[in-house]
Amino acid sequence: MKILVTGGAGFIGSHACKALKAAGHEPVVLDNLRTGHRWAVRYGPFEHGDILETSRIAALMRKHEIEAVMHFAALAYVGESISQPDAYYQTNVVGTLSLLDAMRLAGVNRFIFSSTCATFGNVDHHISEADPQNPINPYGASKLMVERILRDYASAFGIASVALRYFNAAGSDPDGELGEIHDPETHLIPITLFVAGGMRDKLNVFGTDYDTPDGTCVRDYIHVCDLADAHAAALGVLEAGTFKAFNLGNGNGFSVRQVIDRAEAITGKPIAWEASPRREGDPPSLVADATAARAALGWHPRYPSLDDMIAHSWDFLTEHRARLPES
Ligand code: UDP
Image (cartoon, rainbow, N blue to C red):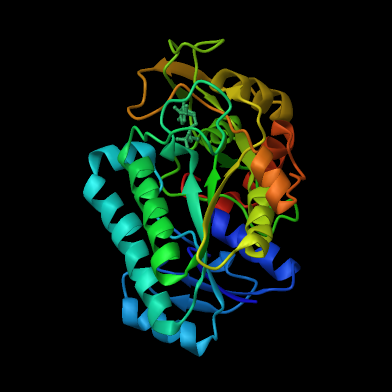
């Protein structure tokens, strides 16, 4: 299938393109390169553009004879979404509406949506698709709004869609072709490894007084290649007129302190850290129940171990240090 991958130059989108190509599909990347990287587009054609350019995107869909869209292009920082909600609603909601309009103009009716566990808010148990969604930050709210739009577009316009709600994407391509480079970097595992690599002095641990086993936030880390595989599998469950959603995680929660401990063990380097105030918008714990994704998508994570995720990221960081903004 020919698939338009918005945000295909980004961290998760680029890994998805590799998985799509391996599964026999043809990914065409659309990216404005605001946060993505041209070097990460390796598995098909590249179109430089923005999801807000509705008629141009429709023309690109016709030109490449696109049959499905995978939509990764978005703003995705919880903290930033609280100070800049306008940017989040504009890019994530208005941008997605523009993309859906382009699809309707071009007659494309298959859509895979990059959603998030942040649509759930505070849930103190393994989160299944049946749990209520009450986001506690604009980022999660913007993604939930799109889920709602997709539900309505499925019944009104027949657009088949699947939303994949990621927990914490981590790791990188074990072949070393792709990896995680954000500027600025805000994510826990890369920053922890920057400290191990001597590129930062210390890690600020946002909150040590949460009601969790060691007082730090608990997250369900999932390897980016496993997320990518789930996208390829999701193409197989698209159904006309239907919206489906799946949670993607490993079902294991690790605290910030546990991540630091494992990173020290894997890198063999000490990691200095300092207790800092809580980061606004952070739920104490987010852990997936991915039973439905495993059953419906036939999805079996290849790299469920946190150690593998940290090791793959460390390999990428040490090999591609020159590309990193902090170096
Ligand atoms: N975190 C931290 N220090 C950092 C970055 C993140 O303590 O410099 C914590 C953050 O508060 C959260 C967890 O690590 O509890 C994962 O954060 P990340 O930004 O990686 O992903 P998110 O959960 O926001 O999607």
